Image 1 (spheres, rainbow, N blue to C red):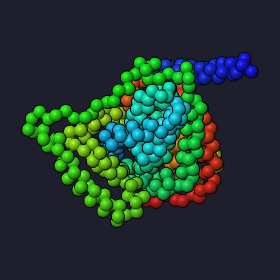
Image 2: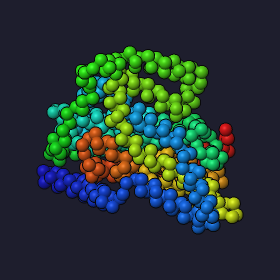
Image 3: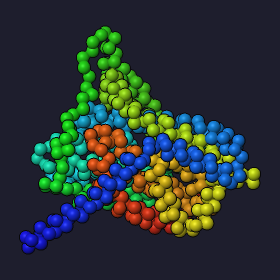
Image 4: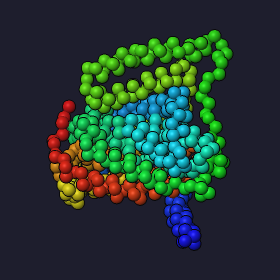
Length: 481
């Protein structure tokens, strides 16, 4: 019996080691050969432009479409940047730190600690992806300070990433759902194709909520059972990571002019004004419609960030630390705006744009029933090369919605198909891991062995649900503003 037990343990270690080696090798390859995500966005511009030229669009028309579309996403670009900043500011506030300290006492063992992080990451991602990423990362650091449990720091770090790698696009901060619910954020050329699709038809569909529940259960279970324990676990100390608390607290003011920066009076007055507007907004409108407005959503979290950090100087310090995480959004989204216009505006002499050609292709290879699975696989593969939920939707929406209309697929479900599938490559793409890795003091290769395990299970589960649930929804024509 003892020999059989030792053999089983050896087999378990060998299987885990093999999977981790495969994932680590893939990450080393991507870190060596994959350039910055900006390069992929630039290559996408070139590929789409070449595609437009290949169908006969004049060179001048392609260039003009690129320039005309370049700045069309500026409102949405700023909205997404503010969303990331406000999420970070809330996550690093003193009250959030106190909550983390308290809830970090709840897990009773190393595996339950990892599963707990996974649940918190997924739950918070449904409200704000940036809060999920930063809050969960800081929670892992707090848990790593516990001396009564030997928690695997790598597995916990991977669990902290599950919100962004599994469910964020199905929550309130979904870039695609926010875009479709806010016509003022969409380029006019795209709005003419998709119309307005409210939250009630996307993230609040019962079928979408069911996908969230299933992914939550599956993700937490995998996080629990895949976490190494005992001598196989590697703690933060084993990895040489210092998990001492990051100090954002203020030093004493040194000059009279600092008084206003350190006084909560300014914060209180500004937040009071904001609270009046928020009360009016939610009392005069349907709350679901109110929160689906991206400006309202960002305003609520920004006011909350000011209040929780209390003093203006601390709030500004938190903002300054959050800004670097928005660099990719700021420089890449204009390229996506240019791509959207090339897809929809640079037409051949026949008047048919590239987006219509692509839509016809997917119509040809799909049916009403197979469309969700086909588009889900396509979106997941493309997501590894264009790691941006909002930017990639601008690229895909013209032909995804056109094909969905032709095949009479529920348009809100087409958005959900995109949301659920585009999150899958995040599990192994180092791009969105960077803010979390900075908090944890780890490298992508440290956690990707665990996130790759999640991907192996998630992919078939997600594609099956997207296909199976599509048959429960009826098609409705697009609603124009």
